[in-house]
Length: 260
Image (tube, rainbow, N blue to C red; front, side, top):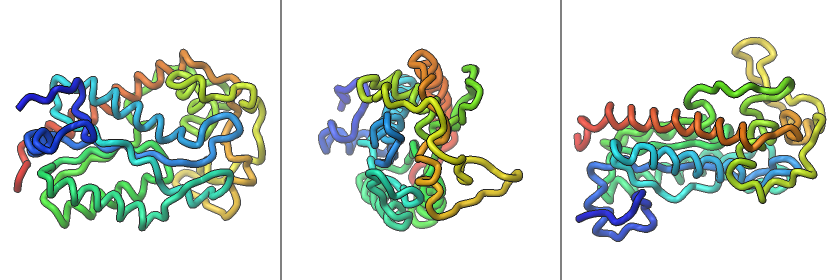
């Protein structure tokens, strides 16, 4: 049976098309979050960018990697800054949801899963799920944080924190994808508060978390007024190329290990 879709989107396929595709395809699942992104970006920024990059990467690999793109998982772990609109899952809940999605889709016939994460707060949980589920099921799981994929030649303005949070980098990306969602008149030109301890390593390898740090910092890592949609498009293309490379390599490494 031929799939009549430029990209095989899980939610658009029939049950027969899914049955035909599952065994040889990689199930690609973007994962985002709903949380504050300063006074100028929408709460679904992480979800929007994860879905955008995952979709573009699947398109880029369409001739070489058989993939089925799942609907984006819009909620993630934002417990570390529960203010100003965060809709958060606890890490255990997020792990349970992701695990259940893999289990149910494996029952359908999928054996390979590629998780594209769009939110830093999800990172540890996504990787933990990937490690634990393969001890339970005969599956292969790849994970990638889209902002870490690929390399970038784009000049970074002084004071910008890349990738940061709701600063120059993320604002540039959203301007490139959905400019109408950016309240440019509200984009801060100065820091909104003291630099949060979460945003840097005081000494190499040291991570510090303290209650209330996100609210104290104003909820952003760096000013966003200089954000540029042209830079955003170039950086999105670089990250998409990186995720596409990761997806291709995952396919190559796992296609001989199906159905064990």
